[in-house]
Image 1: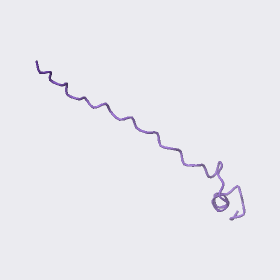
Image 2: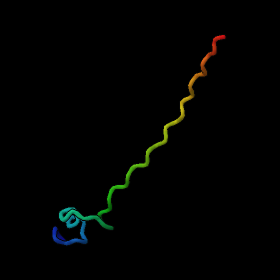
Image 3: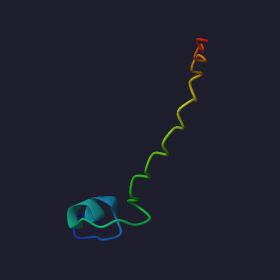
Image 4: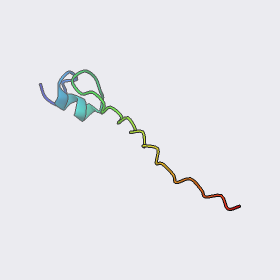
Length: 45
C-alpha cells in the first residue's frame, strides 16, 4: 500500500485522484449577512 496503490490515501494524493478515501473538501456555505437596521430618514417639511 504505497504510492502506486490507487485505493490508499497516499496513492490517491500521489496520482492526484479523489474518491472515498480522499474526498474533496466541501465548499463552505456562505453565511447570510444580517440585515442592518438603517435609521429612518427624517423628512424636512
